Length: 266
Ligand SMILES: Nc1ncnc2c1ncn2[C@@H]1O[C@H](COP(=O)(O)OP(=O)(O)OP(=O)(O)O)[C@@H](O)[C@H]1O
Ligand SMILES: [Mg+2]
Image (cartoon, rainbow, N blue to C red; front, side, top):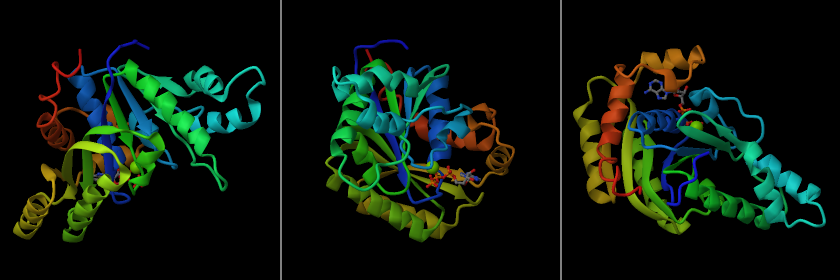
């Protein structure tokens, strides 16, 4: 792991279930690697973690498992913080250009707020080592609060190609203030769109953007290639740069990253 002394900029995915957050997290990681905006720490904050499949890596230990062990296995001469720090490396999967950490299952009944807050402190420390932190969430925003993030540079809100979906995305966008997170930019991505975008969908998107603090990133078409990669269990990271979903996703990301390229990351 390369040790940097900056602080990673956080990019996060949000959106209704099944809209494409994990797929787009994978494409975002692919984009940042291509632009050499590395090292990246990818955090899978979904209890049913599957970002690793998109990235083509095996997960052996999750942070949640270490947190559970911390509760019972911390020796008397060690603080719980020390235990977490000592064992955290077991949960960091190191790959070329990015590392992956999987949060795992949330805690069961009872109050384990302290363990979660230690987890958040550990992530906070780790952020010094990376240029970007990418958080893939499950549906709902409360999972972001497990990480206790203060700032999110860009929050990508993924919607399906429906009027109701776009409306839901605007509601998700307005939820962030309740979490106490500072969000730099909220970007709407409409995924699985038809090749020809109906005027009605375009106007729904325009309405959503004009009414809220959302910026429209763009459309990503329904793709047979993504479907094939999924059923054949090929990591999205391996998808050819010339394929339509990669081109569409990259042209969306391109709009947001020139701003941060060099100046932001010493
Ligand atoms: N543009 C696309 N074209 C075709 N299939 C897609 C596209 N985007 C995503 N999919 C497929 O849709 C399904 C859901 O995608 P994904 O897992 O990325 O969504 P998610 O928002 O992360 O879901 P969850 O809320 O369950 O975490 C997957 O099978 C994925 O392969
Ligand atoms: Mg997902």
